[in-house]
Figure: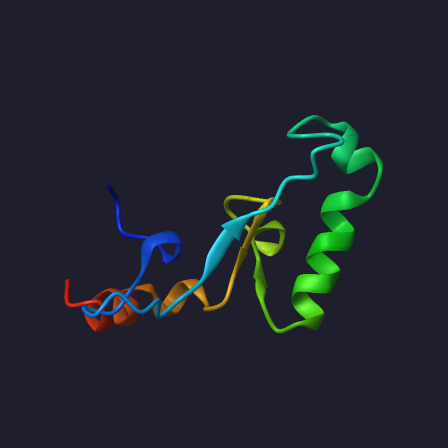
Length: 83
């Protein structure tokens, strides 16, 4: 398994980062979620809460993804995890 914010934890098992992919069961991964404004609304709410929304990324838009730490912190999170 590749290391990511989804599975980051300290050696004692305590999470040191949080990440989730959030999908509305009404639309799943279909274009209907985009048409109904679900992804945009989720991104705006994530940003207001100080979270990182994958829909803001320039190279790879991951509209379902929300995480608690910036991508630039992945190396330090991995080190904190003892890896």
